[in-house]
Amino acid sequence: MEIKTQILKMIQKKDSDLPTLPVVVDRIISVASDEKTTTEELAQVISYDQGMTNKLLKLSNSIYYAQKTKVETIKRAITIIGFDEIIGIALGMGILSSFTDKSSLSLDMKALWIHGIGVATASKELAKRTNPGIANKIFIPALLHDMGKVIYSIYFRDEYMKVRQLATEKKKPLYFAENAVFKLDHAILSALLMKRWNFPQSIVLPCRFHHNPESAPIKFRHQSLIINLADYLTQKAGIGHSGNPVPVTIKNSPKKIGVNQSILKLTIDQLKRKEGEIKEFFNITTEV
Image: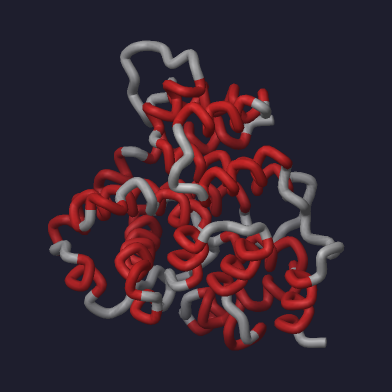
């Protein structure tokens, strides 16, 4: 049975080997899908999980957010970190914890998660400059855009090592090698997984199209373009590692988003300066 068929069966089968997400994450997904959700309601949902609450409080007091006074309540942490960002971080932590008992992976999960934080950081900065209305919303799909690689790395370890080897030999991006070998790339796999877990389209579609953003539905095209470019800039800055042997972005992506070369250089420089903060972000959100 080819890998693509195995994956589709795994995604569609309710009792497959794929982990079920913690109850708190299911509740957070429901909250993320309802635009009427208040800060108080989100704080109440997160408070059900003491471990997550403690990490988010610690994160809101970290150098990444540079607060002068101590943040002591989850409601204030939401105000500091941002409503959508805190949903994204909570989802990321929940998903990551579901895979923590997996070992001997073909990808470095620490480097991949740091890369995701870098892409989320760069995406938010690019969105602020080009489309401020999506600046908060973009953090979640940017953070989780490479989730499909986690599935490949865990469930198809040996095959994925061959995919990575092919990408390195051909000096091509991973998604090219994934399509050549599996007939399914990690962006599509991320979207399939998110649909299984009932993620809203505002998260699913920018992830699904981050390597071919011009094919994205018009409503999510700018987000997809930004994540595509932020992915490239994060790799150029050397923040974490996505497993990609060569950083690529689509032709004329800066122009399509509305930024010039000096903004690209500035974004790379900002990422390099923030590397310590991004690593602290990683350490807090992944500590046991």
